[in-house]
Length: 397
Image 1 (cartoon, rainbow, N blue to C red):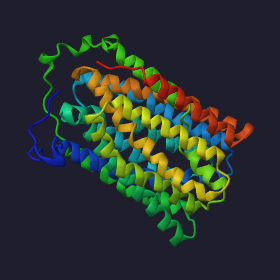
Image 2: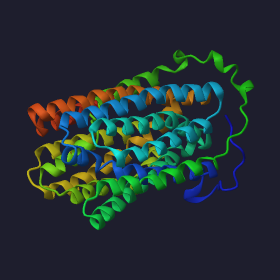
Image 3: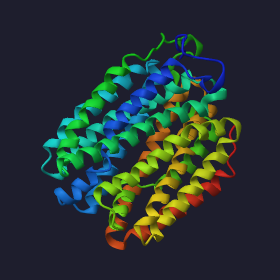
Image 4: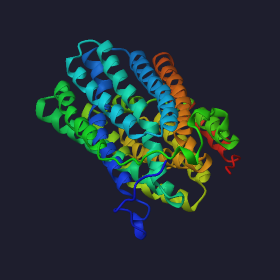
């Protein structure tokens, strides 16, 4: 797939390789994350305090939701390759997430929260792989790390602003969770509207041959090794809600827990672009290795922490891990696979790691309930060390 010429692309400075599509998709993600992150830190607290749901239900909801999203990412990525149409999936996915928002303020039981979360993740599953393939299509090879890093930075700015708005609304309303749920509808609608400004040229199937011949086995061996290493890591990477609840266990109030989560998002936003640029100049494998080691240290710190003062530097350190892995992993996949297979490769990556996330979140909920936070967090740290060790021997072509 090729994109139309872009007047905003420039050849010099930090903006080199940054096109109109990349900027628009970044702003869309920023708006969507304002909406999502207004909800994400408070939904587990709403579940456990207002609706009296146990921790196992929190883990179940997150696991099912992320598993559904992961499977759909695989299918949507593949079909965006087959049809050579990415924007349709992007607009549809953001639209479904927007539709899910009005369900939350109406919830009286945790099953309604599950339904809303499921619809939101269906939307995420449909849009994510085609969106990342659009980014890879628009990014020059020498700037892929920077492009994905910038996208993650804008995404994280939204994730920082969202909780800030949530805290302001909670303070003003006396902890009225439902008011926050209503307010989150607005940025989600704006995100959907902006997706229609994304440009996509007509498909050029003659370059690749018939897309009906696309096969999973066309993906190269280094990709599958990279995927397996990441699956091992994600089996220990449970949903971030467990870190928020850990903060609450150590004595932080609801608002302080959200603020601590914002420290993570701020670090992520600041470091994502530099980490992407570093991966363009250094080996992506080494950048991701460093991220996995930082993850292990962070989770070990959360397990050992006995006072809330440790949470602030730990959440900041957690942002280092995310900046050095999330965008860099997509750039690594774009390096490995052929252009016409990007949607499929990214989709399979999301699907496999999503299944691992289901296992991680479900296991974490069970371990947390039956054996406590320390055992859960130590296991996550151990698996991150294993993944970092395996990544040391991985070589891409």
